[in-house]
Length: 130
Ligand SMILES: [Zn+2]
Image (cartoon, rainbow, N blue to C red; front, side, top):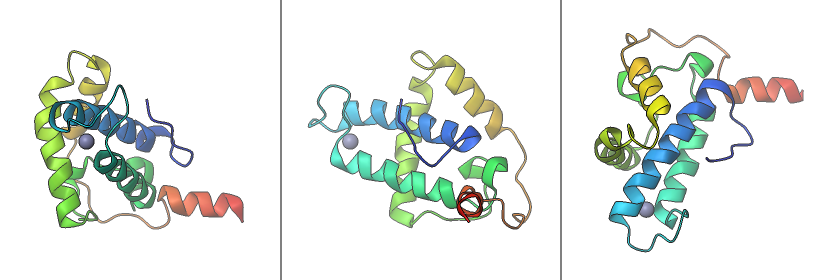
């Protein structure tokens, strides 16, 4: 499981889900993967995802990305994540059943409206520090 020093709750769960999916994808597609380590490309994608999650304007009420009206990912990053989800989504059920079910349930939530002010993880972190 990935360790995030900045995320918690639902945002951390999303990052962990993405980390598990990237692991499945990376092992199948990137030959340079050794043991549990992800390749450079997949690691940097997860770092990017962590930053996006930190800055998500919905914070802990974040919808799943495919329902979200805010397109915060750069197009090529979005494309990579989509590939990983398509490949790994159906393969998650056996190694990570609870994670898969939680992920599927959250995907059924309706799309949200405009994000509220000041609820992003990043915003709350900065306020705690001040
Ligand atoms: Zn990889």
